[in-house]
Length: 456
Ligand SMILES: Cc1cc2nc3c(=O)[nH]c(=O)nc-3n(C[C@H](O)[C@H](O)[C@H](O)COP(=O)(O)OP(=O)(O)OC[C@H]3O[C@@H](n4cnc5c(N)ncnc54)[C@H](O)[C@@H]3O)c2cc1C
Image 1 (cartoon, protein in one colour):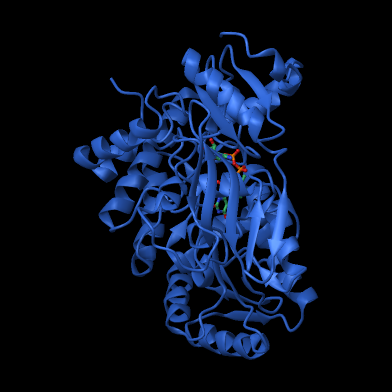
Image 2: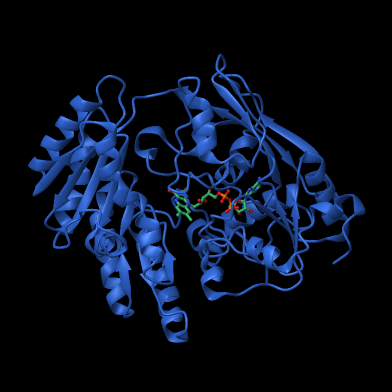
């Protein structure tokens, strides 16, 4: 690789062990222990550093991987061979304008820190991926992150008013606006939200804030069968006011949580639903209403949290779900999203596909949005098992399409799902999207091979 300008010398990570830490995210290459050759990690301190890296990279046609906190589950933030890994976690400026109800943040601000800054003004930044304690706003914007409360509040795109982006070559581009309204020109903010580092590097975000609700209260409902659990989701979706969270964990998922620690879940049930309300002044009332509806829907046990401490206890098992599943061994994490009415078919297919390929599987996630994260567990030391997991993964993508859904609800395409993207978009749309990328990234240096597979 052409040496970086000397002005960036102290931004380059020279310790190979530290650099290796920046080379992987939560995608499957980490489990496989594979590291590419010849990458360099640059920790930018400000926008000037980002510009300098992108100028250098464009001049010498060096691939660039923009990077936040590396919580990507799709391999989108992992190092590429002979690439610059451009980490922007240190760009952490954060300013809240309570009158305009916006926050202006650097891309490295952690999601939970933006929430806390908004809360200090009795405001809220709702998008809440389960990784909120570590993932960054830049990463959230780049993946259009969702999370647990999307069923009421929507996704990251609903809270981004404007962006500052550094393009390949170093040009600084501003999109969108700070004002509550604005329709001047094409919505390029929308184009960059969810672009997964394939167009440029986000260096500032204008985020919309909303009035804070109450601290959420929680209902936990235990169902005898998975079918009954999913019927419960349908019932909740009909209720007004809408719950602020509807999460599902199936029987095998509960077993994984209980193996991780005793969170009080039964092991002989079909699944549980966790449901919340944060409606200002009415959360307790909503809890009672949701509990009655869930009992009518067939729940055999319903626990209602009357205060914040109890609500936190009921949610504790959901919070450890990811580490609990991780502790079960290597897995491919799906992120399909289907119409909510077809969730039952999706979950049944997960088990059938797993059975067909001789794998174990769990289904859990954001049931209120029809967005689940089924996991297929495999033996990383056994090539046949790895191949079976990938085949199962592909079968589930095809199932999601058949049910009228999409291959990714919130984690993005990254490296993991790039081979399937054309199957969803079709060749004409794929060509149009590649042409849009070429407009911003004519030399194809931004996160190449991610989202859009390498041509040829
Ligand atoms: C335990 C766990 C739970 C999770 N739960 C959820 C969930 O509930 N909902 C959800 O949506 N996701 C979830 N995720 C996935 C992940 O946290 C999100 O995709 C998150 O938005 C990634 O943020 P990050 O800062 O870690 O970005 P990274 O992982 O570093 O990067 C993600 C992508 O964004 C690009 N990128 C990062 N920063 C920039 C930037 N400044 N400019 C341009 N491109 C950039 C990268 O190139 C990469 O393609 C979870 C992950 C884990 C490990």
